[in-house]
Picture 1 (cartoon, rainbow, N blue to C red):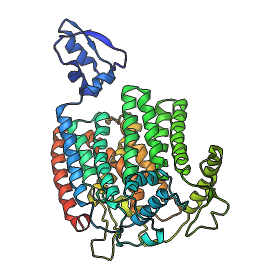
Picture 2: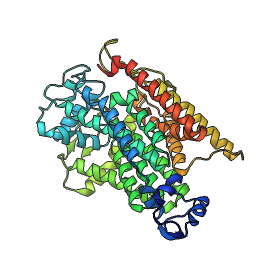
Picture 3: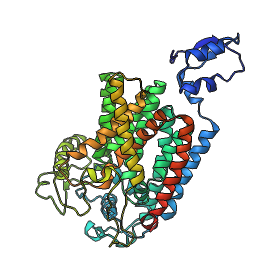
Picture 4: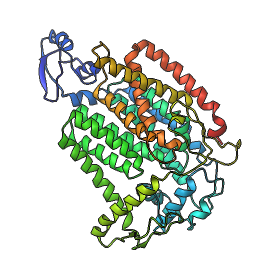
Length: 475
């Protein structure tokens, strides 16, 4: 029997810790629990499910959260100055940051939030303007550009991502240890660690994506519309970083339509679109009207000009044309030596040149161990879904856990059809959701005692493989 938001009264002993007793089911009060409490003979108010859930955070959760954050920060923050030169696409983002600070309308394929964020971080240092051609050289020094400020910011955001994953899993009904294990997977994933030490946007994209899932999980647990709108806000911020977040928006929409109403889905989509348009307006008002300069694609940019900030209607009319050009350019199939096929990274294989000439600490070797486990977990989760549909008696996934699986599939599947070169960072969203699926499946197929033992083994293996890859992680 599930007791939802309306408070109820049952005869219990007044000094009994009701919230702690009932949170065993993650906020669900079971009939057998009520029966055992009823023998006490006194009346006490049982709080709504939202309050039960909020009371189920204990000191051990705080300790685990701090431990995960400290671990993640410890393998990121001390290394933000290494190397003190341009890695992979850092030169591109340094140039777009300078163009934003100096209000120079230069074409960039991505939405504006990263440019606005990075520019706000370094503008106070008054870096000298440099064109993209001077920064598009791997291993070249940054000059007076304060790259370390953005790397510092990313290190904290990457550490916060590990904490968010733990919070998502706790909200989905996992106990402290499984939730902490999910955070440790994020903290010690070599690819995610490397990118969160650099001046690249993927860490911020994952952070807002995880925050959106966090609010969706807690919106369903508490039935609070404020959490639901916060999820739309975070999804809009993620979409304003890269269009990769369209997969996140699509996954959440599928979940909302299946669990709520079409009206709720429209509210969510409206919130996402509002944030996306607002940030474009905030970006464009800083630039004077005029043509957009570009080293390439000048033919496709013909007739597309920045509208300036005087007319909101002009900005709104500009966005569809600019979006069409951006999509056309982004969809082009082009050759790049670091490109990959969709199957390159899924099972944990592949390497990527991010800094200099091999073997001078240049390879981003993916977390073969963690990503391989994700593949196994997704196959296992799909098998459980199938067996359940066929009528077999299996442990069912909760709605939140189904959301993790849907977001994984929606994030990964389009990569098999995109007509362009793919890179390791295109797989990061599916990795985030894959770790959530991995923990969810693990607690389904293993007893608590076995899971605890496996957790200790996994932490040992992850730590070993992480530090064995120190040749590129600690350049």
